[in-house]
Length: 350
Length: 216
Image (cartoon, rainbow over all chains, first blue to last red; front, side):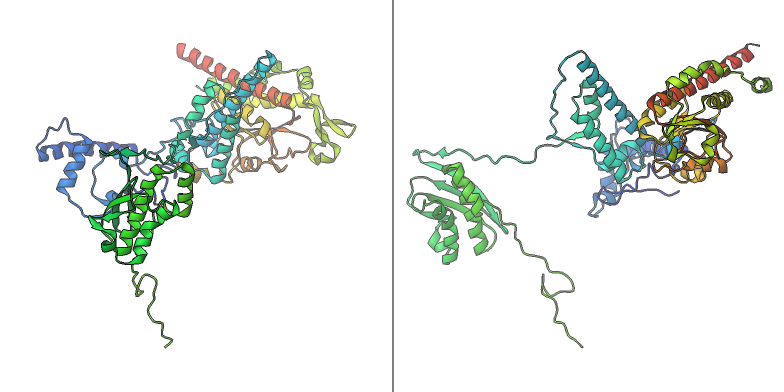
């Protein structure tokens, strides 16, 4: 018998649940479940633990211990899971002993999908009837606005999993259009529950960047910290108020640490941009990277620290100037068949 | 068991379907209204009573006879526990037809007809599938105003058909045609009501007869 190994979601998923008649009979799955339970007890005995209270996590740990594997893909390593998780859900035989199918839309081919459309359309008709009744009784129609911003509809793959049937793109888009039409009408509680089955919450991804307030040290001088990275360099900067423009890096003065003018210009850029060149003191620590990378890291860290001292408008100006953006450029890898990342070997005509 | 099945066949109208409808009901439900003269199909001419202001009027006396034969036939099929499949490609009445089928305990197909549903059933559904024993067409044309593919497929697979044929339809391959309007909502609701009542009556009769047999 052909055993389907569980594949990752990124790989083209063959919807086994929908493709034609059963590949795994019920008897086969029952036998697999019995074998699994037996194997679980053997494994518990081997590990010296109680077979009765042997959970799935214990099984995973035991397998990882007995069969260590250096493979990168977690799904490729040896695993022992319950057969219902390995063999995907199948559709059983659709008709009874006398030959009559169970579902009233069996002869359409896509029974679950069409049943879903039928049910949704019925809900639509109910809502319309409700509205008509309310207008007949001269009551104002209910106006409830559903918050559509925080939710999304199910994707095609999720719907296929729910129905255990293959859908085409047209079918899916039709269903979504019907749902959207249902949503636009002033719906009552009944339809809310029904719609919730097909919508998912989307957590707000945009997080408003919180500018930390100023902290005050022992002498009452305001300061703030910022962190920055560039290539492999990591830097933390502490910017003090009421200063003379002194900058210390890793305990060493900036002129000694960065002999090159270009690096010191990079450090001064945020202060120059905000016209606060001689007003702040800075103490920073930096590690990793090279000369230029460390300079860039400290620049980002100091810009982040300066956000606390400055109005929101100026923060926006800084952001537009590119002072607050992390520089994602890193060294590109060398490819085989080429001399470098981009440089190709010399091309000879003959 | 033999007597159970052969007894209804001896009577011409065992299930008394005549009482379910009258000429006035058909007229009130506007079953006699056909399409315009230009849409007329040649084979529908015997069923047309006349033409008024370019609109064809269907002969309701003939409709009564055909409807009685068709309802009697469906009742017999339902009595012998056959599978009945309702087909209609009219989008307005799709929901109505599906709900009627569900209430009867029978099956419906009001969606796009995939080519090999009847002829290629063993590959599409799986081996051992049972095909419908009767197809009821509540509108025998599809969305492009051509005869529905299922009429031809049923004829190929030796499945009897009952169908409501309008003035622009081809009644040839349908075993029990019912000349009548298939576009008005009132007419469709009447047909659904009639088929539902006949099927439920036939099934109840069957259950009664089986209960009687068991008691003896």
